Image (cartoon, rainbow, N blue to C red; front, side, top):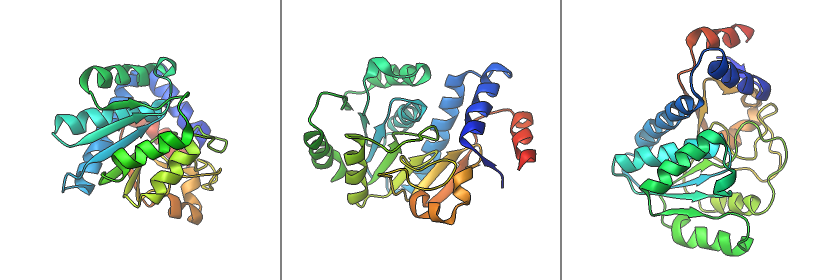
Length: 230
């Protein structure tokens, strides 16, 4: 097993896109589809899934997961905790697909009272979901989650639903494996390419749960370079 630091994650993605010509949206598609296949294995009863999406690539992965679950006929709800016009490029592409395809995509962006938003999420979906997908924030996070996401994380943890974190639980530091503040306590984590450096910290297990590595289609010659680094 080898690990990737926060900086190495960014570097590997950048090189896969710029040096090898793999479009970022293709990497995102592979990531989301791999997570979907894992979730289907973990949830054979087809219990309803609520996917919580943030503004970055993690949120984009969540939109891809929602599409593939919906294509397979699984019950799924999507919440966007960001302003759609400020989504990053590949995430914006997949949001647009989701927006055109789904009627139950809820934008819970700035402007709504925090407690009202959390109460609505809890009453409408967390209480009725079988699984929660945490696609809020990924490896780039380096500061504590602020309101209203902090309250959303607390509600998710209190729901007692099994949680699949995408790449890394929101709120966990990629390099240290320690919580930066409020942090999703995942049952399973679908991490991309390799375990993250912080997963070497035994304390991280309480937040990641069981870790599964997902292939996103980055060229093997590139991945092997990081593998040799250890």
